[in-house]
Amino acid sequence: MNEQQPAAGHRCGFAAIVGRPNVGKSTLLNALLGQKISIVSPKPQTTRHRILGILTRPAAQVIFVDTPGLHAGGRRAMNRHMNRAALASLQDADVNLFVVEALRWTDEDQRVLDELVKQDRPIILVLNKADKVFPKERLLPFIEELGRRASFVEVVPLSALKRSNIEQLPATIAGYLPEGPAHFPDDQLTDRSDQFQAAEIVREKLTLRLRQELPYGLTVVLEQFKEEDGRLLVNAVIWVERSGQKAIVIGNGGEQLKEVGRAARLEMNERFKRPVHLELWVKVKENWSDNETALRQLGYET
Image (tube, rainbow, N blue to C red; front, side, top):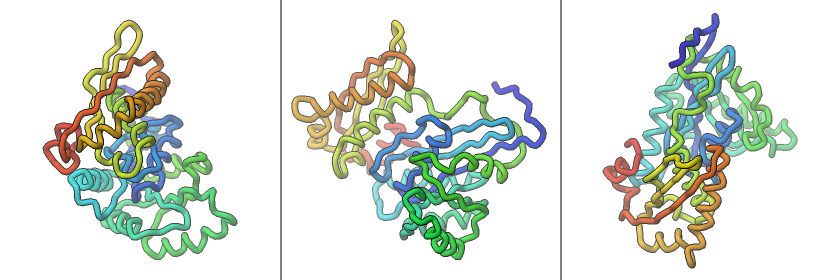
């Protein structure tokens, strides 16, 4: 239990990181915390859950909420789950960080902005990938155009990947949080368990290696996560939707699965600071991503 008493004027609250898929929301969270909390890949819709990232400083505790990208066109239960998770985060936040790609505006960006405006919360506009814009003056007409679409309390150009111009962002966010004590202990970085993170590490490695649409038809569930003789024993099942997908995940002679397992094990060794013995199985659950009951069984809050 956190018994720490807040200093006068101490602030604490929730800042949702929102935007369309693949604008760098998870990369931004990891950069702000200085540690990888959310998995990252170049493929859209990698983030499927709400994940809290907790940044504690003497004057404030900022609780970031990494959200799935709000998107249109996805009719499957998984798409509905991700959109619900993102929208719920907007409603619970004290301030919303609207992440867009510098100089790029799409219909999906507008859809996210429309939802943000409905919430009547302060909106901080974050222009990610600003390091790719030369000269920087090119940003000004873009910012002016977005300013005509909605009222932003702050505009922050930055690069989440290169961690440039992010140093002052937590203090800026804190100015829009309510006064109050910290919700979490100083040393806690996330609300997610080690087991959740281990499963996500496996899913990230699969997403990075597999082609086209297959990553959207798989999920990872841990069946064992325990320490024994100074090492972690981790058993995970990779669920896919069709037998043909199972063959792809395993690969010729099991080579694909071995490489995924090796990459995941190396990251777990580093994350959990101990040797990890990882075993992976691949199983089929027909059409799981379009089945609300299957989603709940596989750990998705629907």
